[in-house]
Image 1 (tube, rainbow, N blue to C red):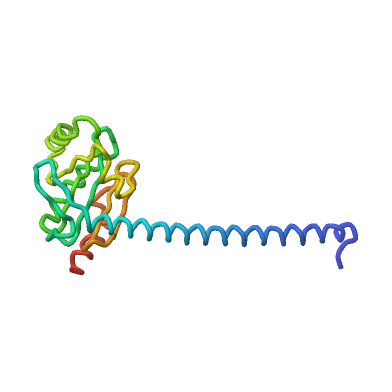
Image 2 (image 1 turned 90 degrees about the horizontal axis):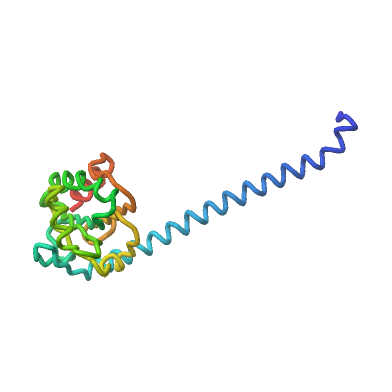
Length: 189
């Protein structure tokens, strides 16, 4: 039997428990919908990336003309970078190692976003970091805008024109799980 003074608190306790249950359910519901919305947004972005990939023709700083959809390499990595972007510069050594590891299987293309003296900046960066991939100058952000790139670094990796990985922060291109993703894509050829 419940003590009489405690009996008056039972409705309050029941209300608190019901309200807590309601809040928990609402938080879970909102979280589910946010994740679903994020997934839909990612799918829309990936579709835009893939459409942009199919029509993109670039001329590198070495005057090489590249039409992405006609590349022989099954995997293409677009790396958006700028010389003033410290995280961009920090990830370049692992990108150089990555390109060396997958030479002939992966095409890495740097998209440089420096607005002033971009050709000169790219040449200096290539020399300083020993870049073993070609870059494109994008001083007017034409390519960056096509891929909705507003900050650096950004890397978008395609397999046969389909997005398989996107990084919007500094990335270690020699990280094991990333390498496994790339190796799987190459084998799926």
